[in-house]
Image (tube, rainbow, N blue to C red; front, side, top):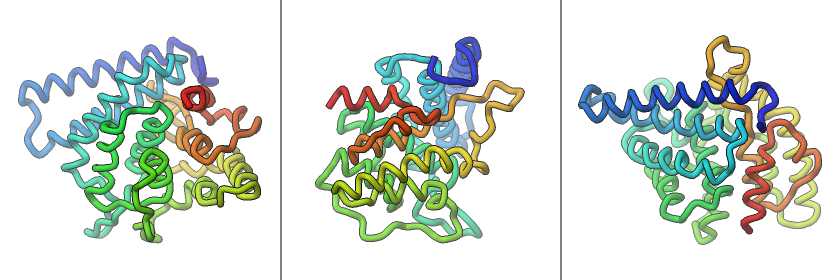
Length: 261
């Protein structure tokens, strides 16, 4: 077990329930029971649920190797649906070239897992295709993508509007990702990541779908893990006891990546 809040029975039930729901959705798709206007939305829900199941398996102590089938299936469904659906932030009949809320986290986690699990380039490129389809430009996304594809051109500017809160949620991690690659830059980055994990990761997600899931009477909790922090630590080359020991840091996922280098 990696999670500190629930036991293996809880996660076994969660994983079983998610699998049953996913099978039901897949059967309805196969039997043409989903109206055309809902097909891609249903596929998007399947991608999300597979990712949540993957995280639940990590919480329950599954080996990283056991997570690959879920990851590849999640990418496939995400690519099928997000390449058609416009998941960008939307307000007052205007779209903005970035994701918002849960969709932002889903993409960030998928990119982070792709890097930490060393998925092949073809799979990684499917995520990049989704991002580039709607010209989404984000510092954390690009930091992870360029770690895999260093020849990718640097973005000149992000595509945010100030009315959205995503930059604020990840403020310290974003600052860490842009520190210079020297001794003092790494020291500042390390301190920023420690502060992000300790003060911001959970509290600044207050208005997001997974916040306080552990308090629900329903079996909806899959774990609280800052997967993106592990990816950024691995990319910029910083780590500390404070980071490793933080309850939100997926240290086994980080160790898996570093042992593969």
